[in-house]
Every structure is written in C-alpha cells, then in structure tokens.
Image 1 (cartoon, rainbow, N blue to C red):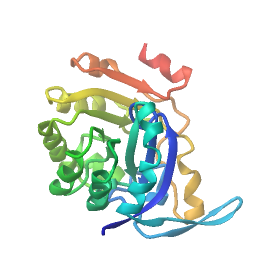
Image 2 (image 1 turned 90 degrees about the vertical axis):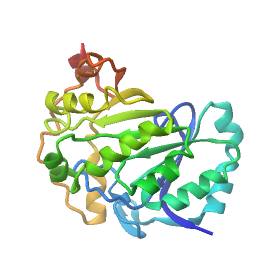
Image 3 (image 1 turned 135 degrees about the vertical axis):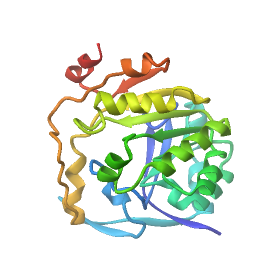
Image 4 (image 1 turned 180 degrees about the vertical axis):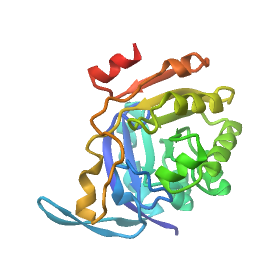
Length: 262
C-alpha cells in the first residue's frame, strides 16, 4: 500500500475547481517560486512551524486507502455541490503513485489535479489521465526568467502541457500575477502565443497576487526576499488572451486592480 504526506485538507473550498470541493495539499515541490504562499509544501518531510499560538507539526502521513476513505465520507456533499476533490500542494506529482491510487479508490468523486506541470512525463500522464480536470500553472515563458524565479527550467512544464493537450482531459491555464515579474505584457503575450492553438483548453485564469505570501516563512526559518514591489497593482491584461481567441478571466482582484482590465 502506497503512503503519502500531506500538510492540509481544506473542506468546502470554492476556488479550487468547479463546485464545492475538498482540497488535499501534498508536501514536496521541485520548484522554489519566489512568491510561493505555501512554503510548508517545499519539502516532503514533516516540519515544525512556529506560530503566534505555539509550534505545530506540519505534515501527516496517510495510506492511500485511509485518505480515500476520509474523502469518500464527503462524497454525498461533494456530489450534491457539483464539486469533487482537488489535489494541490506543494506539487502533487511528486507523489504521483500515491495520488493515482487515492483517485482509483474514490467513490465516483470528481478529481482535479492542480499542478505546476513540472514532473516526469510518466508521472504526469499517470495522474492527469485519471482526473476530470487539470489546473495547469504557467508562470514565466522565458526559460532564463523561469529559472531565476523558480529555480528550474520550464522545458519539462511545456512538454507536459503538450502531453496534456493530447490526453483529452479539459484543463485551465492559471497564471499567478506577480507585479513586474509574471504580469508583464511580454510574458502574458508569450504565454498566449504558446497556448493559443492547443486543444482541450477551457480558459485562462489570471490570479491576483497574494500579498500575505511571506507570512509563513519566518515560522519555518526560511527567508522571504521579494525583489518586486508587493504593493504595486498587477497588470491583469486579459485582452492579450482574448485577442488571441482565448477565454480569459482575472480572479481575486481588488476593485483598483480590476480597473486595469477595462
């Protein structure tokens, strides 16, 4: 029996896929995105995090059978809410065998993979083909910039994106808007060009920058050193995508930021 390590299970999530969902956050990620707001997902091992109410252990190991049993108890609510289970992280594909086995044990519950796309091709296919939806992050299209801000080249990500387009699983491209980094017209136009002719793409989501991103880092003893202006309004230019014939929506923006898309 395969086991996996998670750092959170969030019930009644409404922003992690269609309908009412339960989101499972898995530990371990090959990327080190400079703006990540879940640093407890970086490493696969359990950690101790200091908080204002004391220390807490981050990380719980469960068998695929035990996690599936827990999720199946929520099946009536998830189905009634036209939702399902979302596997996020961290990077869930770092525990691909575990996630695949959990999905195989779900009792008719819709599954969604929320991924950076950075993984072995076989692991990517193993999980993506079992899912009803994939949320696929694209952060920076330029390889050098991607390596600078995430620590990795984006070639495996783009290769898995092409593989996803061949699978027939519907997917949404999600672009986290980091002011002056990922939200530039040049980067957004590069992403639009890369995805405009791919089959299976449902829409593009431009995600608001999380200004609380650095809040957890001190408790884990990890430095958070943004090189961008966190107070700067992001460039939510959905027109770049709609002009390319793609459906695009900006999510989670303040009124001030939303005006930039008008």
